Image (cartoon, rainbow, N blue to C red):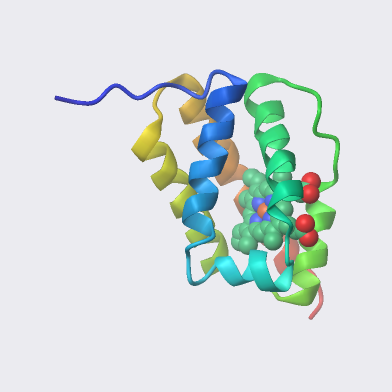
Length: 129
Ligand code: HEM
């Protein structure tokens, strides 16, 4: 029997999703070093921003007001983000959704992530070496 999976329809669900997604990302041999070595993020600071970000996009919360593109430009300046990096990021994002969530907002999250990832990848690719 197909297990019932909840939708990303509350702050608590979005937080669960982000924690599960980062569980994958921070164990991924391609992506983990970008977070832990290149950017050397403090998870206690970073994760609340990511939770605010997805709560804004999926639930219309207003807390997130930061310039995500500039943050990735800065990262890209330290170590170039490749098409393969973006493909892996998106694969883990979708795999996390497949495992735990389903429904309208879950599908919306897939569409938004794919659009923003492609846009970010293309804009960064235009940056001079
Ligand atoms: C190759 C793919 C990606 C990698 C390796 C990556 C990596 C990172 C890293 C290392 C940071 C922390 C930067 C810092 O604080 O110095 C960050 C921040 C962030 N990323 Fe990404 N990212 C990727 C794609 C994306 C995409 C596609 C999105 C959105 C759909 C996204 C959303 C964010 C957000 C919201 C922040 C938080 C910025 C803040 O307000 O502090 N990232 N990312």
